Image (cartoon, rainbow, N blue to C red):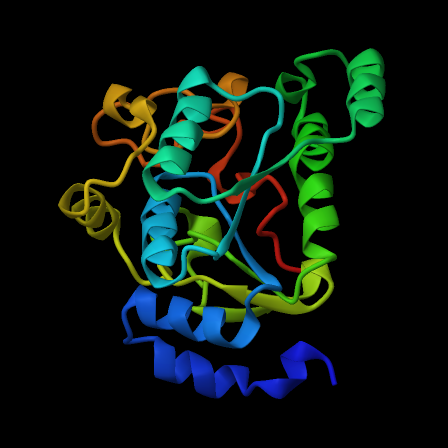
Length: 238
């Protein structure tokens, strides 16, 4: 029996919708560890790392190193590792594919067209993630419904058909940006220093800029594209 067939996802969603994120993580760790791992990237995610470490220090955490990250991003990875004493699996893109892409399209191809930007995201992010998820039964994200117009339908528990039909847990789905930062400050969670410089959402350095007061929190990501297409491919549903 496939792992996903063991659970009534609709029933679980109803049960978990009003529960705290920790309760969903506790369920996931009890049912799916060690074949469940958390994909860590943004501010929301350090809050989830803190929750996981408190529940089970052996919880698996990984992050994608695209080769184009800011120094502040590497710094917070080390600070999180030091604070919680946890292992963080670092995933890298296939070097030969990056070299071929840069040779054929240029180093900064993402500025040329939406297609080239998505190609870069695919090589540097989606393909490494796909390799990792192929060895898992479930993954955890920091997705929230209020992050972007592309994420308003995010559910606490999903079957991720994009990545082989594994279980996808989104414990912060119904949290707000304020909820996240209240948790970070209350629990003294390490966070990316770029957040103090006007970066509410952080990706690769060339594709992320600070946002102006009143702008959407994701407006600094791929700012040359329309909001409806602002996804890198990690969370696009088939």
